[in-house]
Image 1 (cartoon, rainbow, N blue to C red):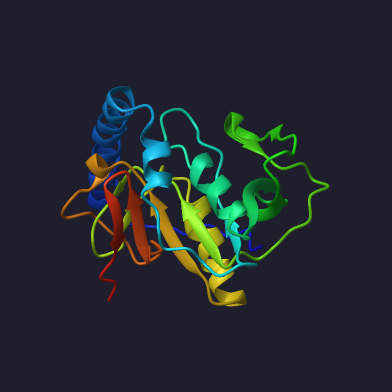
Image 2 (image 1 turned 60 degrees about the vertical axis):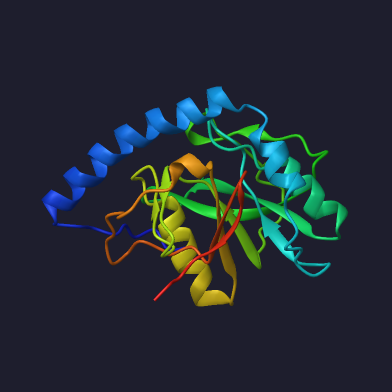
Length: 202
């Protein structure tokens, strides 16, 4: 996993993203409060099943992120192998790797208080990554938290194998237009409690 960081000297872009992050955190919190069982409805309405044996990386929901656990459970029941991201100390900052995961596994608290597999869980290269976010648009653009962990992790994974990245979000997190920078990794699709959105990536 590379330990380099993407840099942007576009100050107006940074300011636009910072302002949008603040707004979207409030919007997502409101969506969570209004519909705390949205993760169950998202899973119940899901029908785009990957082939059995597909390695699917989910995530541990943090604060008011859409809960992917019901969907991950359903994917496991359909024969998929699960993984979770883990932030590790790469010597020059934190890097994201993916580690094998089963729903019965005991997770440990990682950086920022997010639960992740222990260091003894083997690293894997997923075929499908379920990605948390603050905002998305139908061109596959994603607004994250600004740390760049997913952008760097997906950029590295792209150099290793073909894979798909699907955002997981409340429908209320859709925004147009979404500010984007060259290093921002695009989503192939977004799943919300309202359905599956195949993005129109360039």
